[in-house]
Image (cartoon, rainbow over all chains, first blue to last red; front, side, top):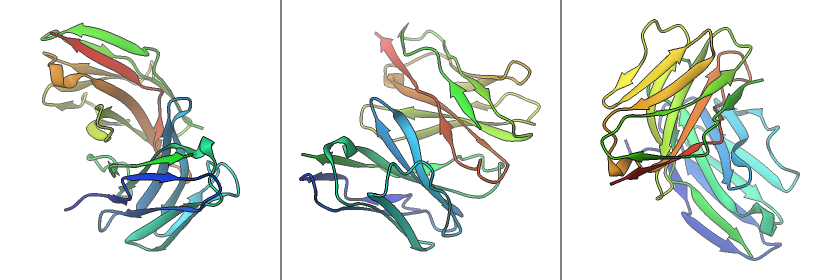
Length: 116
Length: 116
């Protein structure tokens, strides 16, 4: 299994530009999560999906952020327009349903976003 | 709501000594799972160990063990015989069973530095 695949690994963009982050979860996993990590706020959940349906998007900072999961094997997180304060590492993670998943949540390698 | 508290921002430990990283939690879910993740300087999130709230025995994975005290709502990570490669950030996390609590909630982390 290739694990959770995120692209790009690094993104540098100018303020005001649209940014799209991509994620391919592990095949068969029911849940997909988008997290953001910054020094100031730590790891914070942005949104998560169950069977491609958004369950909780209360962590999405504002209307500039949107996320989609058109099918079980692909999700995007879009920021439009981007701002310098959006600079962070964005992680995608996937998991199986149920508390019995002893292997936890599998994280992708993250996308380091820099908005200048 | 779920909450994870890690009170040790940083720790310095001599190589080969055992180290305990503290974690306390709060939740209203009757069942929940507790996780520890390691984040080395390279940035990836590495799953270490899992403890289910109804597990009778403390979880162990190689040099990692989880000291689970349910009544005290604590889930401390113990690393035996520490190695230089253990230097990293360590995050405690939990998820619940109720709808909407399937997400991982993270603590603020502890930066562990192993001294040769």
